[in-house]
Length: 106
Figure 1 (cartoon, rainbow, N blue to C red):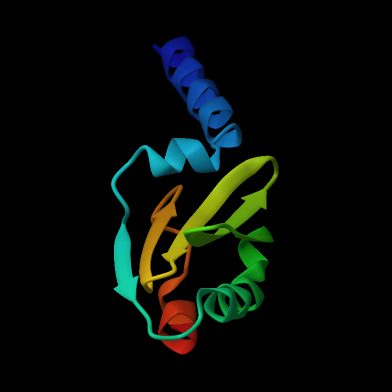
Figure 2: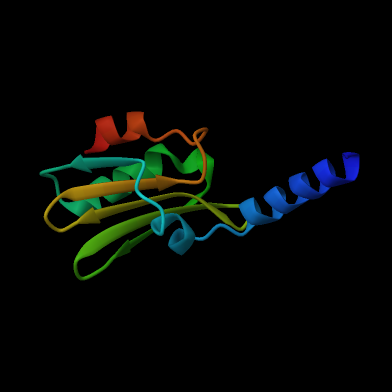
């Protein structure tokens, strides 16, 4: 019984350490929002506000701006903001804070 429990904990740890933005995006978003501000300005504000949860990477694409937070080789928070102002949030678990940054920045 103990070996089974340890194996499950080890497997969960390995899975958590290899989470990518693509993995998160395959799930439904945990939050959606709208903004009238330019996506890049919102992204920069969020990345500065929540940088304690991982190293932020902001990429401005043709149709959307993405913010990816990575900590210990795992994506912890992933946010997209379309050019139309529609935002979506994905996070690896419920312990990742982001709402106050969204309220302040979006």
